[in-house]
Image 1 (cartoon, rainbow, N blue to C red):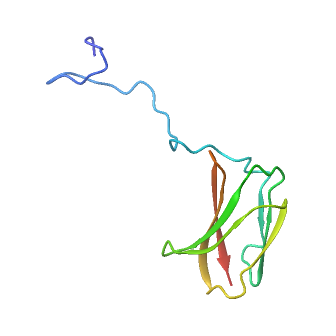
Image 2 (cartoon, one colour):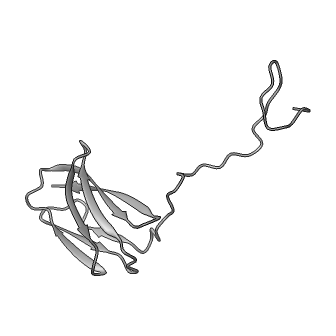
Image 3 (cartoon, one colour):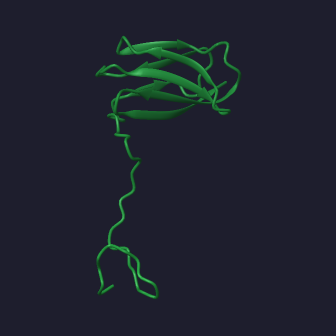
Length: 107
C-alpha cells in the first residue's frame, strides 16, 4: 500500500478503499413515476410514463425473444397481451440514455 500509484505490485499489499456499483451507460428513469399494471395480467397491460422523451417499449419473454415493440406516444399506453403464453416477461422502457426493466407475469 505505501507504493500507491494505482497498480498492483508483485508480493505487494493492495486494498479497496471505495466501491461504486452501477451499470455503465444506463441511467435510471424516475422509477416511482412509471407504472406498469396489473401484475399479474391476463389480457391487457397498462403502462403509464408521465414524462415522454422518445421512449420505446419492448417486451421480452424468458428466452430473450422480443414479443412486442412500440414507440411510446401517449403517457398512458395499453398493450394487448391476450395472445401471449402464460409466464414471466420483461417489460423494458428505453430511451437514448435510459433503461428501465420490470418483470410482469402473464396469467
